[in-house]
Image (tube, rainbow, N blue to C red; front, side, top):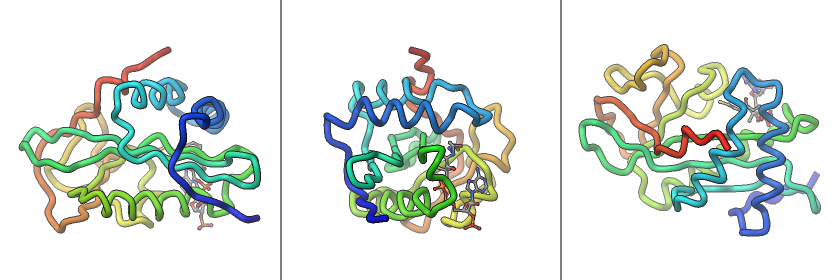
Length: 167
Ligand SMILES: CC(C)(COP(=O)(O)OP(=O)(O)OC[C@H]1O[C@@H](n2cnc3c(N)ncnc32)[C@H](O)[C@@H]1OP(=O)(O)O)[C@@H](O)C(=O)NCCC(=O)NCCS
């Protein structure tokens, strides 16, 4: 496998949508993830959008978009969605995408990032639930943060409105 991790280009959009839909088909999630990626792109909110390409085929994608923190802390981003093609999961592609996306976030000077997801998966990248940094309506152990500047704000996090996209 020769995997190329690179920023998305405009011609990737349809493949990313198909990949995202396929990856989440059996996941306990909203099934709106592909719409969310498209809406984030249209809104200019895809700060980091990397694809994993194997030959001609896109086999993975990860997105980070800005979030707001009620304390006013700046420079925080939300991870998601992250998708690996169903037939290619468990081969380290998601981990490589995470690694490169976090490096890209550091490069653009991000203060930190949050994720709503399985602590068993994201803990390996340094994410953990942090006291006082919350996402309303979500069990605290599933809402995790990783500071890139050493500081953890306290407050309520809000994702961009496009996370409500349903078509
Ligand atoms: C979650 C996902 C992106 C991970 O990508 P991946 O390429 O399969 O992950 P990796 O191969 O890098 O996995 C690394 C490790 O995480 C584990 N892992 C994968 N998905 C996991 C999950 N949902 N929960 C806990 N552990 C998970 C793997 O078993 C592997 O463990 P190991 O290193 O001890 O063997 C991918 O499985 C996927 O697209 N899932 C469907 C969509 C989804 O649920 N996205 C995340 C929503 S928050």
